[in-house]
Length: 114
Length: 113
Image 1 (cartoon, one colour):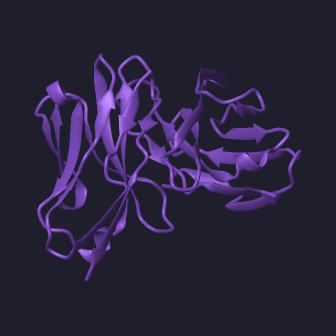
Image 2 (cartoon, rainbow over the protein chains, first blue to last red):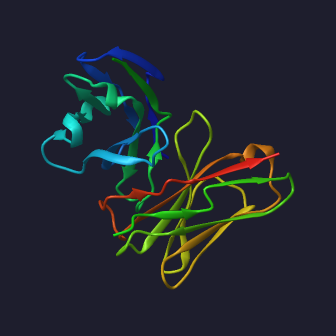
C-alpha cells in the first residue's frame, strides 16, 4: 500500500518569501501525484497534478511542483507567497492500479504574515 | 454547473446512534468516493462507488457502509457511532478511469457526543 509523508506540519512565512513544501511517497509502481489546497472554510481544491511527461508541472496561482522519481518526491514551490496563500496544503498519490483512490499526506498548514 | 454537493453540513449525534450523509456528484461524473478527515489530519479513503457497487474500500470497519443510486448520487451510513467517528466527511466525484481530476465537496462535519 502507498503512503505519503509531508515533513512540515506548520510553516510561517512573510509575504514575498519563497515557499517549498516537501512531499515524499512510498510506492514502487507508476503513480499520479497531486497537490490540493484547503482555504479556511472552503473545500479541497486542486492546485496541480502530475500524470506523465515533463516532471515540472505548473498549477494555478503561481504554484509549481517537481516530480523527482529517484527520490519519490513531489515538492510544491512558489517563488513569492501572498497573504491569500494562507491555507492547508495536501499532497496526494494515486497508484496507477488503484482507480481513483487517493492517499493523502497529513497536510501542511501555511500561514503568511502580511 | 454545480460542483459536488453534500448534506447536511453539520450534525451532532450521540454514541451508538446511526448517521446518513448524502452526496450529489458534479455533473457528468459517475464515480463517487468518500473520505474521512479527522481534525489536523489528511483525508483517509473510506470507499468508492461506481455503477451502484462498492469498487474499492479503505481500512474502515463494516460499520461504514454506502450506497450509490442510479442518478450517481451516494449515501454514507455509519452505524453504532463512536466518539472517534467525529470528523469531516468528504465526498469526491470523478469520471471513471485513472487520471481524471477528482473534485471534492465541502464536507459534512459530524460530531459524536
